[in-house]
Image 1 (cartoon, chains in turn blue, green):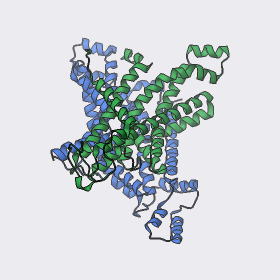
Image 2: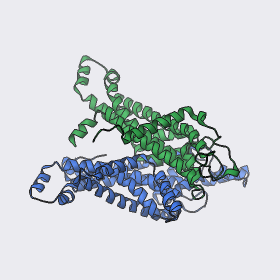
Image 3: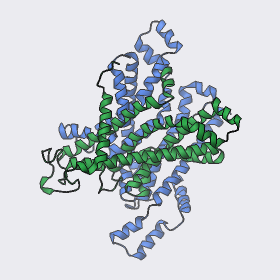
Image 4: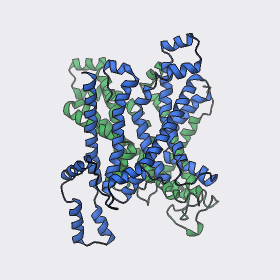
Length: 309
Length: 276
């Protein structure tokens, strides 16, 4: 099979995946006993008759597959429905929340990548220094300590103790915390990969030419090890989504995470559905991008026709 | 590294042991009721009567943490067991039967794997409703792929090995090969995955509780204790600090202990290290 058909197969697979994810999320959100109409009724504003009317208007009486069909049809056209609580279009709510989340995620990713790359290269250049134990510590910290614990400790130190930053609304602490998480995820695999690459013949050649250790590490070893970061992009993104979700709630930032949680608390189905799906969609999109990026960064893959699923 | 009588790992072992002990003894260690509210002694710093102070409702923080230890550990443990049972057993059955069943099972796991665990368990909690068994189910399902894919990898590796071909030549059927030959070889890899999943299960449960979607409020887990204290961070920092430190220490210790266990049990690890 040639490259183009391989890639289109990969795309079809991801498309099938996003459809099934959409359906699963739809089911999960709809199997809840008690819908929005019940919630109105519980508040006491409506009698049984008007509750039935609300159900009919919102299409809650039809079968689940047909509800999903209708929803999907509208969603493809960019219409994600209306918030059951506020009556505003869900699409507008999402696009309103997106910039804040994107800025947070992008800044965290940038900080995390910089920190991770620097530490891993430092560890390679100075293998007997403290940097290596730093790498170990950061790795196990990011895996083991929940983001919100780090966040709360940060709040207690910098907001409550030192009073340098406000608790709510600032983005510095969230970026540092999520970024450290990202750095911890990539730093150890990258370090191991760097060490492995440093055994290659071309590194011996570079050393024989008399290049400095720094130059060898940055210019020769690092570019040949970058594919490990691409391979980890799924893990990174998963951490990024979980992290932004948590810090947004903790620091009261108006992003997709806060939107999702608010919607869950208010049983606002269309909003829950759309925001969870948007997050899952971003994962699938990145998975797809990974396939392309991998071949771009590591031409060996294109030669062997290898595609990781 | 020089060997001395003390290393940081011992601290991790100690922390895990103490947590297990507290979880086992539970309310025997309690002098005060974790749910009793006393509005006269709100927001206290640690005193002789309240070792770790009180929270915004005058509840004893130490009592709440001790009471929460058992549920925190039990929920994480059961969720891990569920993930192991669901992931490994379904995965193995799929591998053994093969064909369509295998495709369907792994397509399902692929969908689960695509969703970040926190996001998926959040969506599952929406469907299941708040409660202890829902949390176990939600976290368990979210981590099933971690077992299923390792089970498949080990299964495929073993099936390609010489002794399995030999067993096949003698006339052993697929189920006999799987149970008698492959299963014993899969335990090491599964123990490794347990070590990876257990601290994450603690984390995920506490995040759910922190979001207000975890166990019911009457029985606090550490995540719940933290969630109820976080609004009053400025009034009572101590009510927040101690549970957070305890939770971070527990997950960190579990990860460290798990990492050590993995070095003992993982059959793949030495090969990787020799290569690096």
